[in-house]
Image (cartoon, rainbow, N blue to C red; front, side):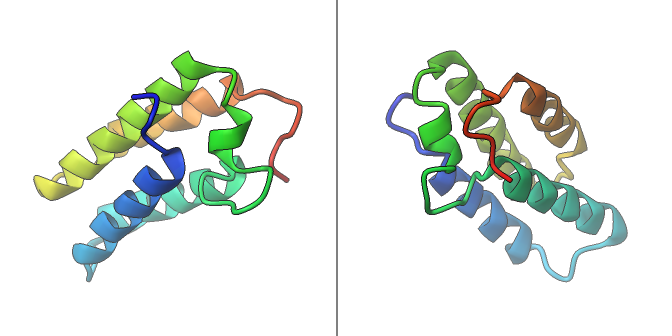
Length: 103
């Protein structure tokens, strides 16, 4: 998974959520949680705070985040609400390198 970019996977997740519009309440809540995670981690940031860059020297964590984002993509494609996957992503936030934290 070393060549998979978190930035791109987060974009694909966003598209997956938008394809399911109008979102029912539980999926809307899930989408909001996803965007809070994206903004907090810098998953879609274009500068040096980008999550791909911050996890450059943490390949295990980078691969885990990419794996979870792929699960969100497949969950959305199957018509499921990925609450359990988002919960895991939110847990992994605490493992992010503290230096270079995204504001």
